[in-house]
Every structure is written in C-alpha cells, then in structure tokens.
Image (cartoon, rainbow, N blue to C red; front, side):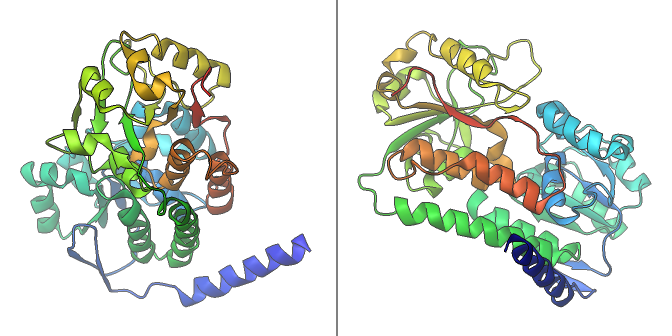
Length: 376
C-alpha cells in the first residue's frame, strides 16, 4: 500500500509540473505591490537576505544554490549550524560571492553588477535601505528586476504568497504549490481550534532573550515577526500594545505589571561574548537547553512575572520569526499558548516533514522549542 501511495504522489507531481510550467515573459506582483516583468527564466540571481536560501530550497530542491551569483550569507553569521549542514551538502555554495552587507539592506553594488544578474530577490523590510543607498535605482538602470518577498512584516499572509510568486518567477510553480498547500492545511488546523478561545490569552514574547547577557531585558516585536505570529494564532501580543514602532524594548517592570498568561523567549546559538540565550537549533541537546533556561530564570526580578511563576515559560528557535518554515514556529506558539487544545501536536514532526518532503536539505538533529524545566 505505501508503494502505491508514493507512486501516486509522484505521478501527480509529474502531471502538475507539466501543467504549472511558467511561460515567459511573465508579469507578477511582488509583496511591495509592484509589477515585476521577467522576460526569461532567471539563471543569475542575487539574494539580498541569505536566509532566503531556505525558500529556494523548497523550489530548486536538487541545488538551492544553482542560480546564485551573489548573496548575503546571513546564515553563516546568525545560524552557523544550518549553514554548515547546507555547505557540506552543496560545497560549491562556499564559493559564491558573499557581499557581507547587513539584513537592513545595504548592498555592495560593485559586487552585484560584476555578476551580471538577471534577478535580485530582496526582503520587503530592506526596501527603505535599498532606496536610500541607490540600489533600486541602479538595478532599474541596469534592467535587473527586483522581486520583494516577505516573511517578517506579514509572516502568515506573505510567506505563502512570496513562495507562490517565486515559484512563478523561477519556473517552480508545482514545488511552490505543494508546500503552500501543506502550509495552509497546518495553519487552518491551528485557527480552527483557537478562534473560539475566549478570553484571548495575553502573551509576552521576548525576542533574542539573553543575546546581550542575562541582565538585558526585554526586546520584543509588535505587529511584525514574533508579534504578528502570536496574533496569528489568536492570542493577544503584549508588545503590540506597548511599542510605538515595529520592535523595541519593554522594561521588565512593565512586563510584570501586564501579568502575561504566557512568557515565551526566542533563542539561538549566536557567536557573541555576551550571548546567554537558550541555544535552540541544530546540534543542541535538551540538557543544554535546560541549563540555559535555568540561568534565564535566575535573572533579577524574573520570578515575579506571573507566567514564569505559574509555570507558563517557554522557548523557541529564534529564526522562525523571519523564515519560510515559520508554520513550525506557529505550531510551537499554539502548543505553548493553548496546551490543552494542542496536547497531541508535534511541531518537530512538522519540521521534519517539511525538510524531508519538500527539500533536499539534510535533516539535522537539535532542539527547536521547549518548555522551561521545572514548569507545570
């Protein structure tokens, strides 16, 4: 029976690949609402935010680096374990020009122009910087289309929409549809259970908790990134009511006064001297996660936070806030915020299914989310 199932899926994919092939020239609308015209299939791509190589991994599955001529290898800087996995699988990736600019959008124009690109893929959050530095104008002068995608400003809406747009742009529509269908099925399963919960739980999510040391607190997101994801699963994001902008710091005293029902931190393995974050990601053990959690709970005044005191303290892999696989982050949030409704949900299984079913990225071992030890 399993053989028949896989044969059927393969046949369907072969049929859909034929029927969903892109015909060029093609006009599509990007996440900035602009029309982008592609005269031919892009073969020489510049990636403004290197973390989007994980989006390309959903589309150019045999080799997500095959079109890249220049990129900003943010994975190497912010998530070296993932970069090591991908570089070992596709060693030629290490030879691609790394422009070394930041995630804000700065671009070394000479490096880009020298590679004769036929498409630049950029994150919507970088648009103001790309305008200010003259990059967009230069690309226009050179006739290089710039396609804006988004996994941060409106993560739940724009992530599947961005993958769909890239599927059309890169002649990978069947691969894009397979993943976005999976994404929507999992998201609908979340909101089907959370939309009727009343009152809405109040959640504070501290992004990059401990990155600047245990004494620093508390950086958070409003209606973007983690804040938008909290709201997308039907909860109230405390940061949205306190921050004047998209992101910023909230004092621990203010968090205590807000009496959150749930306190969630995001963490990663940042290579900085001050980093005391919970080290979620590849090559991490549960004991390492628990040890970092225990140190986090010793922060001055932290035990006064209602959620921490009542055993509702959790952590999750930071990079899901701006990630094509953020459906896994959404499932972790749902499980943390609504433990009774999602007792059987296994976000780690969803992660494994995405990686093994929709990409050829090696499946590493690690920890992507957890409840603090000693919690109820």
